[in-house]
Length: 74
Image (cartoon, rainbow, N blue to C red; front, side):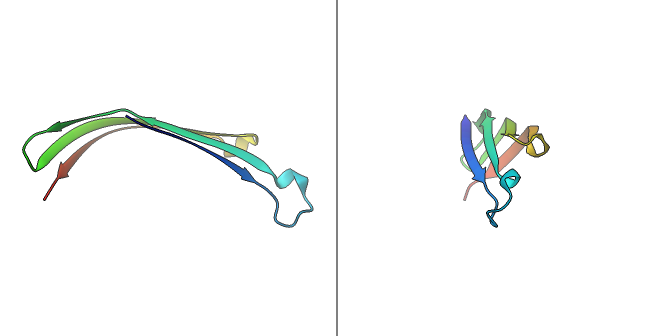
């Protein structure tokens, strides 16, 4: 299981435009299952949900991913 959260505050660099400020919240959650096939090879599946919300709706987004992976260890 993986999870995370990040908060970012953006502001105008010229100091003149107040509307250029923005707050962004980003979080994700990633449950996964891996199986050891041999000493050197494992395989797994995962689901990843990511979401970013902002006080300006133009910058808000949501993403879902499902995948498989294989790992070879030396």
